[in-house]
Amino acid sequence: MQKLTIVIPAYNEQEVLKDTVPRLWSIEREVVTQNFLSEDSDMLIVDDGSSDNTWSIIESFHKQHSKIRGLRFSRNFGHQAALIAGLTEAIKTTNMTITIDADLQDDPEKIMEMVQAYSAGADIVYGVRTHRETDSWFKRTTAQGYYKLLRLLGVQMVPNHADFRLMSKRAAQTLLTYPERNMFIRGLIPKLGFQTAKVYYRRTPRLAGESKYPLKKMLAFAWDGITSLTIAPVRLILLLGTLAVMLAFGMSVYSIIVKVLGLTVHGWSSLMVSLWFLGGLQMMSLGVIGEYIGKMMTEVKGRPRYTIQTRLD
Image (cartoon, rainbow, N blue to C red; front, top):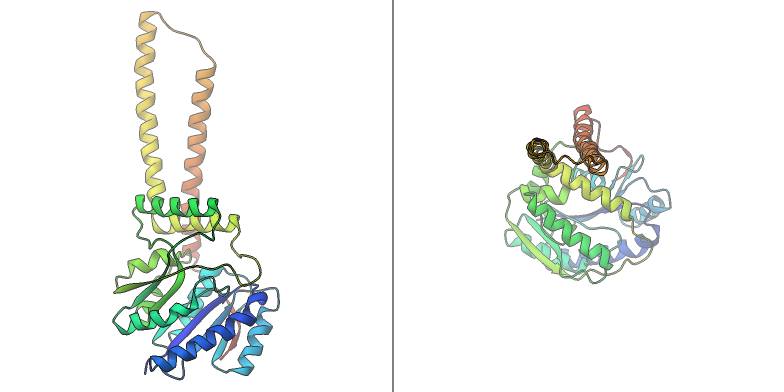
């Protein structure tokens, strides 16, 4: 029989876990019964180095149900690392995994449809939001602009999909063969090439607590997505540099013509604007190149993505 494991990354989620875990456990039991899945189907919560009582809550649930398992990081390694750790642990014994955030803004009632899509032959089932009405105007607009930017850069993405998805064992195993540390999972999944399906849902507000992705983290995450999936920014630098050289050549020709015609105008403003523009362009270019070199250095070091401090099996 097929076994299902629900993987839940959690970072300082003490306010929601007491409601999240029982609800997901109940849904999973219902899915197991109706879809004839293995009774060994379980749940794996990955504590991403929380500083509150998240781990204590996980321990208490594990004592009540041995199939509610836990991993605890030695420190905060990030959401993507928690997902990778959960998948790595889960696929040792399971046939399919479903990843969902602890705040349950993604609709857990759609787990049933995901499992049915898997039974119909899909190796990857995306949970896709039907609207963004719960987001602020700024977040909604920037998210839509980000997806459009990625498409322009040649990156395959599923719009309005985060990390609520089902993956078969072979799909998860294939993802885990990607060795990079700078991972943007939702951008890598479409590269796997397996049969996919989509389940649509309406996102709801958090049950409690605050978002673990404030604006600063969201911007950093978005930038990681671009730099980990495409070298288009470096190519853009080459294009801008080429245009600057062409402009400089044109200005040189113009200056010679003006000089010959005796129409030379001595100006300070135009000179300073040109210097500041080219200087700023050079600094930005160095910054983008430095970002890629820094990520290359991180990859070359080959440091572990995460460190597990405690396991609850």
